[in-house]
Length: 327
Image (cartoon, rainbow, N blue to C red):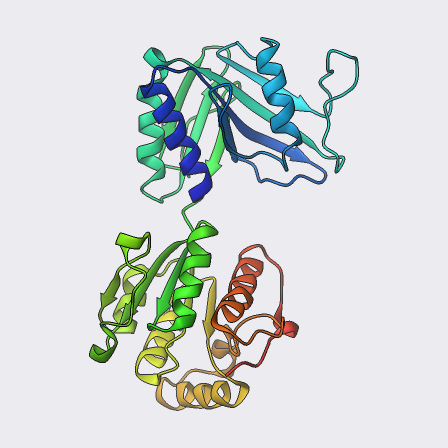
Protein backbone atom coordinates (compact mmCIF):
# COMPACT_ATOMS: atom_id res chain seq x y z
CA UNK A 1 0.00 0.00 0.00
CA UNK A 2 1.56 3.30 -1.05
CA UNK A 3 2.19 6.39 1.05
CA UNK A 4 -0.62 8.42 -0.57
CA UNK A 5 -3.29 5.86 0.34
CA UNK A 6 -1.87 5.48 3.85
CA UNK A 7 -2.27 9.22 4.28
CA UNK A 8 -5.90 8.91 3.22
CA UNK A 9 -6.46 6.40 6.04
CA UNK A 10 -4.69 8.69 8.51
CA UNK A 11 -6.94 11.58 7.46
CA UNK A 12 -10.03 9.37 7.82
CA UNK A 13 -8.87 8.34 11.27
CA UNK A 14 -8.38 11.98 12.29
CA UNK A 15 -11.81 13.04 10.98
CA UNK A 16 -13.57 10.21 12.80
CA UNK A 17 -11.74 11.11 16.00
CA UNK A 18 -13.04 14.67 15.55
CA UNK A 19 -16.60 13.29 15.40
CA UNK A 20 -17.02 13.87 11.66
CA UNK A 21 -18.59 11.35 9.24
CA UNK A 22 -16.37 10.31 6.34
CA UNK A 23 -17.01 9.17 2.78
CA UNK A 24 -14.31 6.73 1.65
CA UNK A 25 -13.88 5.61 -1.99
CA UNK A 26 -11.89 2.57 -3.11
CA UNK A 27 -11.28 1.71 -6.77
CA UNK A 28 -12.59 -1.83 -7.37
CA UNK A 29 -11.95 -2.12 -11.09
CA UNK A 30 -11.12 -0.04 -14.14
CA UNK A 31 -11.82 -0.37 -17.85
CA UNK A 32 -10.01 1.50 -20.56
CA UNK A 33 -7.84 4.46 -19.70
CA UNK A 34 -7.80 5.17 -15.96
CA UNK A 35 -5.32 7.34 -14.04
CA UNK A 36 -5.18 5.37 -10.76
CA UNK A 37 -4.78 1.63 -10.05
CA UNK A 38 -7.23 -0.72 -8.32
CA UNK A 39 -7.20 -0.23 -4.54
CA UNK A 40 -6.50 3.51 -4.70
CA UNK A 41 -8.33 5.64 -2.14
CA UNK A 42 -10.10 8.97 -1.95
CA UNK A 43 -11.88 10.37 1.11
CA UNK A 44 -13.63 13.49 2.31
CA UNK A 45 -15.56 14.67 5.34
CA UNK A 46 -17.70 16.73 2.99
CA UNK A 47 -15.31 19.61 2.39
CA UNK A 48 -11.62 18.66 2.69
CA UNK A 49 -10.31 16.08 0.22
CA UNK A 50 -7.64 13.42 0.68
CA UNK A 51 -6.17 11.15 -1.97
CA UNK A 52 -7.33 10.64 -5.53
CA UNK A 53 -9.15 8.17 -7.77
CA UNK A 54 -8.84 10.26 -10.94
CA UNK A 55 -7.35 13.46 -12.23
CA UNK A 56 -9.98 15.48 -10.38
CA UNK A 57 -13.17 15.01 -12.42
CA UNK A 58 -14.54 12.16 -10.30
CA UNK A 59 -13.69 13.92 -7.05
CA UNK A 60 -15.67 17.01 -8.11
CA UNK A 61 -18.71 14.90 -9.01
CA UNK A 62 -18.30 12.96 -5.78
CA UNK A 63 -18.69 16.08 -3.65
CA UNK A 64 -21.81 17.00 -5.64
CA UNK A 65 -23.33 13.56 -5.02
CA UNK A 66 -22.70 13.94 -1.28
CA UNK A 67 -24.48 17.28 -1.29
CA UNK A 68 -27.40 15.63 -3.09
CA UNK A 69 -27.52 12.89 -0.39
CA UNK A 70 -26.98 10.15 -2.98
CA UNK A 71 -24.12 8.56 -1.03
CA UNK A 72 -25.61 8.12 2.44
CA UNK A 73 -25.77 4.31 2.42
CA UNK A 74 -23.20 2.55 4.65
CA UNK A 75 -21.78 0.78 1.57
CA UNK A 76 -22.53 0.92 -2.14
CA UNK A 77 -20.91 0.48 -5.55
CA UNK A 78 -20.82 3.39 -7.95
CA UNK A 79 -19.79 2.97 -11.58
CA UNK A 80 -18.45 5.99 -13.45
CA UNK A 81 -19.29 5.30 -17.06
CA UNK A 82 -22.77 3.83 -16.57
CA UNK A 83 -24.37 5.79 -13.69
CA UNK A 84 -26.63 8.65 -14.74
CA UNK A 85 -26.44 12.15 -13.36
CA UNK A 86 -29.56 14.11 -12.44
CA UNK A 87 -29.64 15.76 -15.86
CA UNK A 88 -29.65 12.33 -17.55
CA UNK A 89 -26.04 12.47 -18.73
CA UNK A 90 -23.53 9.81 -17.79
CA UNK A 91 -20.78 10.26 -15.23
CA UNK A 92 -17.66 9.35 -17.16
CA UNK A 93 -13.97 10.13 -17.34
CA UNK A 94 -12.72 12.59 -19.99
CA UNK A 95 -10.28 9.87 -21.09
CA UNK A 96 -13.21 7.55 -21.82
CA UNK A 97 -12.41 4.96 -19.17
CA UNK A 98 -14.77 3.41 -16.61
CA UNK A 99 -14.09 3.13 -12.89
CA UNK A 100 -16.06 1.06 -10.40
CA UNK A 101 -15.90 2.44 -6.87
CA UNK A 102 -16.75 1.05 -3.46
CA UNK A 103 -18.16 3.94 -1.45
CA UNK A 104 -18.36 3.64 2.33
CA UNK A 105 -20.08 6.16 4.57
CA UNK A 106 -18.25 5.96 7.89
CA UNK A 107 -19.61 7.04 11.25
CA UNK A 108 -17.37 8.17 14.16
CA UNK A 109 -18.82 5.84 16.80
CA UNK A 110 -19.20 2.71 14.67
CA UNK A 111 -16.34 2.54 12.18
CA UNK A 112 -13.12 3.74 13.78
CA UNK A 113 -12.10 0.29 15.14
CA UNK A 114 -11.89 -1.50 11.77
CA UNK A 115 -10.22 1.55 10.23
CA UNK A 116 -7.57 1.39 12.96
CA UNK A 117 -7.00 -2.30 12.13
CA UNK A 118 -6.67 -1.51 8.41
CA UNK A 119 -4.17 1.27 9.09
CA UNK A 120 -2.13 -0.88 11.46
CA UNK A 121 -1.94 -3.64 8.84
CA UNK A 122 -0.99 -1.19 6.09
CA UNK A 123 1.86 0.23 8.18
CA UNK A 124 3.55 -3.20 8.27
CA UNK A 125 4.26 -2.82 4.53
CA UNK A 126 3.30 -6.47 4.01
CA UNK A 127 0.78 -7.82 1.51
CA UNK A 128 -2.83 -8.15 2.67
CA UNK A 129 -6.39 -8.52 1.40
CA UNK A 130 -9.26 -6.25 2.34
CA UNK A 131 -12.68 -7.91 2.06
CA UNK A 132 -16.10 -6.23 2.12
CA UNK A 133 -19.58 -7.76 2.14
CA UNK A 134 -22.08 -5.09 1.12
CA UNK A 135 -25.14 -7.27 1.81
CA UNK A 136 -24.08 -7.97 5.39
CA UNK A 137 -22.27 -4.64 5.87
CA UNK A 138 -19.19 -6.49 7.08
CA UNK A 139 -15.48 -5.89 6.60
CA UNK A 140 -12.36 -7.97 7.17
CA UNK A 141 -8.57 -7.78 6.76
CA UNK A 142 -6.68 -10.97 5.81
CA UNK A 143 -2.89 -11.13 5.97
CA UNK A 144 -2.73 -14.65 4.50
CA UNK A 145 -3.09 -13.46 0.92
CA UNK A 146 -2.59 -16.91 -0.65
CA UNK A 147 -5.31 -18.68 1.31
CA UNK A 148 -8.08 -16.23 2.20
CA UNK A 149 -11.60 -17.71 2.50
CA UNK A 150 -13.63 -14.96 0.80
CA UNK A 151 -16.01 -15.85 -2.04
CA UNK A 152 -18.94 -14.05 -3.66
CA UNK A 153 -20.68 -11.85 -2.49
CA UNK A 154 -17.49 -10.72 -0.71
CA UNK A 155 -15.50 -8.09 -2.61
CA UNK A 156 -11.72 -8.35 -2.22
CA UNK A 157 -9.00 -5.78 -2.82
CA UNK A 158 -5.41 -7.05 -2.82
CA UNK A 159 -2.65 -4.79 -1.55
CA UNK A 160 0.88 -5.85 -2.46
CA UNK A 161 3.92 -5.76 -0.26
CA UNK A 162 5.36 -2.26 -0.27
CA UNK A 163 8.01 -1.33 -2.85
CA UNK A 164 11.35 -0.36 -1.35
CA UNK A 165 14.67 1.17 -2.41
CA UNK A 166 18.00 0.16 -0.90
CA UNK A 167 20.57 2.90 -1.44
CA UNK A 168 24.25 2.02 -1.18
CA UNK A 169 26.46 4.95 -0.22
CA UNK A 170 26.01 8.56 0.87
CA UNK A 171 26.21 11.11 -1.94
CA UNK A 172 24.34 14.11 -3.29
CA UNK A 173 22.65 11.81 -5.79
CA UNK A 174 21.61 9.46 -2.95
CA UNK A 175 19.88 12.30 -1.14
CA UNK A 176 17.99 13.44 -4.23
CA UNK A 177 16.98 9.86 -5.07
CA UNK A 178 15.80 9.31 -1.49
CA UNK A 179 13.65 12.44 -1.57
CA UNK A 180 12.06 11.51 -4.90
CA UNK A 181 11.52 7.88 -3.91
CA UNK A 182 9.79 8.76 -0.65
CA UNK A 183 7.50 11.10 -2.57
CA UNK A 184 6.80 8.27 -5.03
CA UNK A 185 5.71 5.99 -2.18
CA UNK A 186 8.78 3.79 -1.78
CA UNK A 187 10.19 2.74 1.57
CA UNK A 188 13.79 3.98 1.41
CA UNK A 189 16.79 2.60 3.32
CA UNK A 190 20.39 3.80 3.10
CA UNK A 191 23.66 2.21 4.19
CA UNK A 192 27.29 3.21 4.28
CA UNK A 193 30.43 1.95 6.00
CA UNK A 194 32.83 4.87 5.45
CA UNK A 195 33.59 6.65 8.72
CA UNK A 196 34.59 9.88 7.00
CA UNK A 197 31.04 10.20 5.57
CA UNK A 198 29.25 10.18 8.94
CA UNK A 199 28.70 13.95 8.91
CA UNK A 200 27.70 14.08 5.24
CA UNK A 201 24.11 12.82 5.50
CA UNK A 202 21.84 15.71 6.42
CA UNK A 203 18.36 14.55 5.33
CA UNK A 204 17.61 12.89 8.65
CA UNK A 205 14.25 11.92 10.21
CA UNK A 206 14.19 15.30 12.00
CA UNK A 207 13.84 16.89 8.54
CA UNK A 208 11.43 14.23 7.26
CA UNK A 209 14.22 12.05 5.89
CA UNK A 210 15.82 8.73 6.79
CA UNK A 211 18.61 7.39 8.98
CA UNK A 212 21.82 5.83 7.71
CA UNK A 213 22.48 2.21 8.64
CA UNK A 214 26.21 1.88 9.27
CA UNK A 215 27.08 -1.61 8.05
CA UNK A 216 28.60 -3.54 5.16
CA UNK A 217 26.59 -3.15 1.97
CA UNK A 218 26.32 -6.89 1.31
CA UNK A 219 24.87 -7.57 4.78
CA UNK A 220 22.49 -4.63 4.32
CA UNK A 221 21.16 -6.00 1.03
CA UNK A 222 20.89 -9.52 2.39
CA UNK A 223 18.83 -8.23 5.33
CA UNK A 224 16.23 -6.34 3.32
CA UNK A 225 16.11 -7.37 -0.35
CA UNK A 226 13.05 -9.15 -1.73
CA UNK A 227 10.96 -9.27 -4.92
CA UNK A 228 9.72 -5.70 -4.32
CA UNK A 229 13.17 -4.16 -3.89
CA UNK A 230 15.38 -1.99 -6.09
CA UNK A 231 19.07 -1.85 -5.13
CA UNK A 232 20.97 1.28 -6.22
CA UNK A 233 24.76 1.51 -5.89
CA UNK A 234 25.40 5.25 -5.70
CA UNK A 235 28.61 5.57 -3.65
CA UNK A 236 30.90 5.68 -6.69
CA UNK A 237 33.25 3.68 -4.47
CA UNK A 238 33.95 -0.04 -5.11
CA UNK A 239 34.30 -0.68 -1.36
CA UNK A 240 30.58 0.02 -1.02
CA UNK A 241 29.14 -0.52 -4.49
CA UNK A 242 30.75 -3.82 -5.42
CA UNK A 243 29.94 -5.56 -2.14
CA UNK A 244 26.34 -4.38 -2.29
CA UNK A 245 25.97 -5.38 -5.92
CA UNK A 246 27.21 -8.89 -5.19
CA UNK A 247 24.57 -9.15 -2.49
CA UNK A 248 21.95 -7.80 -4.88
CA UNK A 249 22.86 -10.27 -7.63
CA UNK A 250 22.26 -13.09 -5.15
CA UNK A 251 18.84 -11.65 -4.26
CA UNK A 252 15.45 -11.52 -5.99
CA UNK A 253 15.50 -7.70 -6.30
CA UNK A 254 13.44 -6.55 -9.28
CA UNK A 255 15.99 -3.84 -10.19
CA UNK A 256 19.76 -3.51 -9.67
CA UNK A 257 21.57 -0.38 -10.80
CA UNK A 258 24.94 1.31 -10.38
CA UNK A 259 26.06 4.90 -10.92
CA UNK A 260 28.98 5.51 -13.26
CA UNK A 261 30.13 6.18 -16.79
CA UNK A 262 30.26 3.49 -19.44
CA UNK A 263 33.99 3.03 -18.81
CA UNK A 264 33.45 2.73 -15.05
CA UNK A 265 30.58 0.31 -15.62
CA UNK A 266 32.75 -1.88 -17.87
CA UNK A 267 35.48 -1.99 -15.22
CA UNK A 268 32.88 -2.85 -12.57
CA UNK A 269 31.55 -5.75 -14.64
CA UNK A 270 35.10 -7.03 -15.11
CA UNK A 271 35.69 -6.91 -11.35
CA UNK A 272 32.44 -8.71 -10.61
CA UNK A 273 33.25 -11.42 -13.14
CA UNK A 274 36.78 -11.83 -11.80
CA UNK A 275 36.18 -11.55 -8.05
CA UNK A 276 32.56 -12.69 -7.75
CA UNK A 277 32.74 -15.19 -10.62
CA UNK A 278 29.50 -13.88 -12.10
CA UNK A 279 28.60 -14.81 -15.65
CA UNK A 280 27.58 -12.31 -18.34
CA UNK A 281 24.04 -13.69 -18.07
CA UNK A 282 23.93 -12.99 -14.33
CA UNK A 283 25.34 -9.50 -14.88
CA UNK A 284 22.63 -8.77 -17.45
CA UNK A 285 20.41 -7.89 -14.45
CA UNK A 286 22.69 -4.94 -13.67
CA UNK A 287 21.57 -1.56 -15.04
CA UNK A 288 24.85 0.29 -15.56
CA UNK A 289 25.12 3.02 -16.57
CA UNK A 290 22.01 3.72 -14.52
CA UNK A 291 19.09 5.94 -15.53
CA UNK A 292 17.26 6.99 -18.69
CA UNK A 293 18.55 9.44 -21.28
CA UNK A 294 17.20 12.84 -20.31
CA UNK A 295 20.53 14.68 -20.59
CA UNK A 296 20.93 14.82 -16.81
CA UNK A 297 23.97 16.59 -15.34
CA UNK A 298 23.09 17.77 -11.82
CA UNK A 299 22.32 15.48 -8.85
CA UNK A 300 18.57 16.15 -9.03
CA UNK A 301 18.48 15.53 -12.78
CA UNK A 302 20.43 12.28 -12.36
CA UNK A 303 18.05 11.26 -9.58
CA UNK A 304 15.06 11.88 -11.85
CA UNK A 305 16.67 9.74 -14.58
CA UNK A 306 17.32 6.94 -12.06
CA UNK A 307 13.83 6.97 -10.58
CA UNK A 308 12.28 7.06 -14.05
CA UNK A 309 14.05 3.79 -14.88
CA UNK A 310 13.22 2.18 -11.52
CA UNK A 311 9.53 3.05 -11.86
CA UNK A 312 9.43 1.95 -15.49
CA UNK A 313 10.96 -1.42 -14.54
CA UNK A 314 8.50 -1.79 -11.67
CA UNK A 315 5.70 -1.18 -14.15
CA UNK A 316 7.03 -3.68 -16.70
CA UNK A 317 8.44 -1.15 -19.18
CA UNK A 318 11.89 -1.72 -20.67
CA UNK A 319 14.21 1.28 -20.93
CA UNK A 320 17.51 -0.44 -21.78
CA UNK A 321 17.96 1.52 -24.98
CA UNK A 322 17.61 4.84 -23.15
CA UNK A 323 20.64 4.55 -20.87
CA UNK A 324 22.41 7.81 -20.23
CA UNK A 325 26.18 7.73 -19.72
CA UNK A 326 26.86 9.94 -16.70
CA UNK A 327 30.01 9.66 -14.70
